[in-house]
Length: 216
Image (cartoon, rainbow, N blue to C red; front, side, top):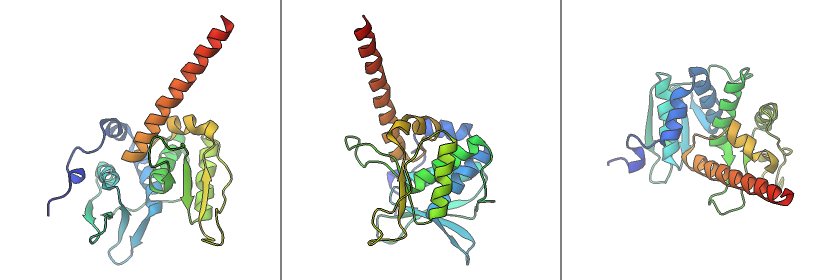
């Protein structure tokens, strides 16, 4: 069976590919470290396995892994609309991220794997992070705060439904800072963040115009 169009070469948006090509090996490794939070490690085959419905993001991961000279392969999981990337690469360390650029890259990877934004552009905009590992989620929130991105508290939406389900939102007042500092290399999330950035830019321009008109 031939792979879908989204598995063909050159499916990564030019803007994302340009950013990836400019990234250092350390930033790429930090991004993959964050993205690996959504993965599982196969001890038998010694491979990292990440699955997702949006195969385009797996192509981004494949490109990043190739930048590090690491092998990976992508396949469909059974008959479900779920795709898997498997690689022999593993994070060298999941300890502290010391460099600001690396911290932003780590959070970007974490967001692309575990973060949430609206499905449609016209829905109410939000940025959230979700994880079952509370300590890991708290560490990511701390990194965001250090990068100047304000966040709400970590909370469990329904302890009765799932006591191990944790999330937090990026404050609306920090959406622009998040987009500028963290951003996304996930095709769908990148598009929504770019559209939100344009909306915020237009809104700021209109506010400046209204202020100028009031002073005139």
